[in-house]
Length: 203
Image (cartoon, rainbow, N blue to C red; front, side, top):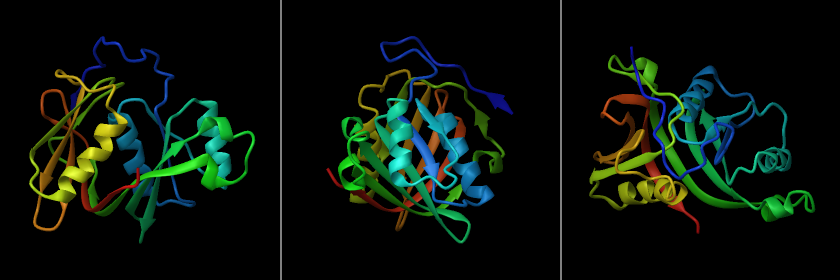
């Protein structure tokens, strides 16, 4: 297995403790869903996984606010496979003063998934550690679905994009879906492959 590099020097936060996205799942996730979010968090800059357990959405928000995270990603499953990704933008100022989840959270985006392929299931998979910058490849996009899926991540990572990125999100069209492939800076697969059948941006 090849190993990716550890990130390049740039103006983004340099601490490994910095968290942009806190990633978790619905309650009682399958082993496959847990593996999926682990791989995703290892390859997307400034993300961290935590076990949800019995935490409510309000408790998740408090945890995220305690780490100064800007977004919360929750992966829901169907028949033991990842099925939907919900992304919430967090308002940390309201976490301690409100128990109304509609005030604490604002739904930012949603991705409906038809299937995933884990990096460990790919014969050419590589591993990358501590990526700090990200790039986007949308040359193979032609559908509204593909551009909308890429827009979600472009908005989240607008301050962390680079011409020489540590990790690349590659978007491509299929007949009825968009495939997101996570690559390292040399173009090798280093994260999960995600097939998206619906992408929604709510703000």
